Length: 249
Image (cartoon, rainbow, N blue to C red; front, side):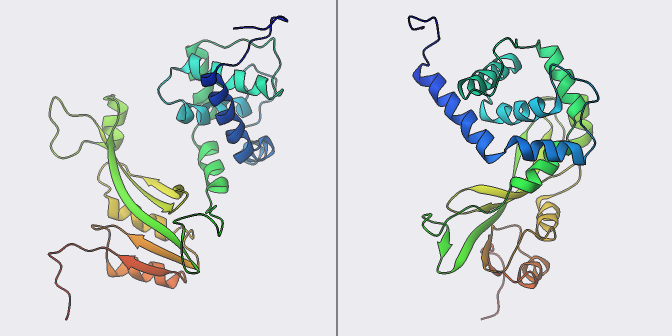
């Protein structure tokens, strides 16, 4: 739909997309993106149609519009940036092959470093469900998910249990989330042979746990070592244990 001047009138769905892009660029400002790219030596020596900064926002938008293909995600990203007046109009969406190659050039290090700089607790004192008294509520849990059945995924992640013809490679993950906001402030992805307990240990030893937190840990991840890691960081701990665990009376 367009107005009398020929400009497109945003639909309700496109307005939602524009808002999502706006929130994304506010939470991850381009100055921070440029800083991370420069720190990791990924800045291009010559101008390209898909520079590293654009690809960072494209990868973020892939999570925002996870049900769409590469071209559609880029189209929504560009339309959202144009709506905010931060994108030149003559730019056209590249092919999926070009987007795939540019994503491979970017690599994973930039996204990992960027995540580490923006993934922080963000609850305000007024955020419902985020506090118990003066303690910031945090939750540590593990989970798993199937991924596409490619030789690379099978080699790196392995399978859940015994490999069968119908099974898919299986990824184990662990994350520390802020209750109330659901912000995941630390995450670890396991490779073949690594369980959730190993991933939880990495998170607890990463320095993300701070004084003033109450860290709640799900069943299956409890251990004296994990308890000491939380307490030694200056936080409080609340561990869930199975009914089969014998505790002294």
